[in-house]
Length: 194
Image (cartoon, rainbow, N blue to C red; front, side, top):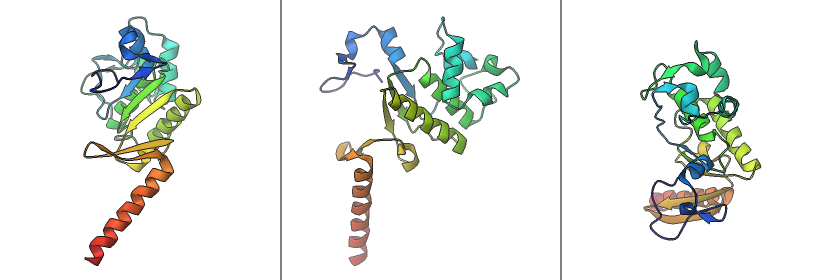
């Protein structure tokens, strides 16, 4: 999501290379949900707002609602003012993941990068995740998901399958999945015949 420069070629966002953007502007255009969310020492509101000094309370609530975290936060004794730490505090893994999703969605980024986004989510959290992905796509944004589980790619239109660092398949989701199933069936059949 901009941490490392590409080893070849270039990455463009809105037609411009990433180095043409002011880092603060670029940071607001990109949302990132890692596989293991690390919270910052501070309140839930501060965590969702990425520790922004001029955070918009309405944008914080909107991001939490999109992530399916708003009601969960309101059930906490201190709500959005609940203090958390890098260890998560009293939040479950799924709750931390939802706060991380809200952080990734804060400010309505145009490009969202997710690494195993449903690794700690329950069914309600997964529904919220899928709705958030659809919302970004509906407003013309791009979602990039790295995943091993089929449930994580439910909202994807296009898949790129990598194997040993090389492109194995690329195309519409259903076509790539069909190809993977056919290849697996062929391999299983060949092993059974041997």
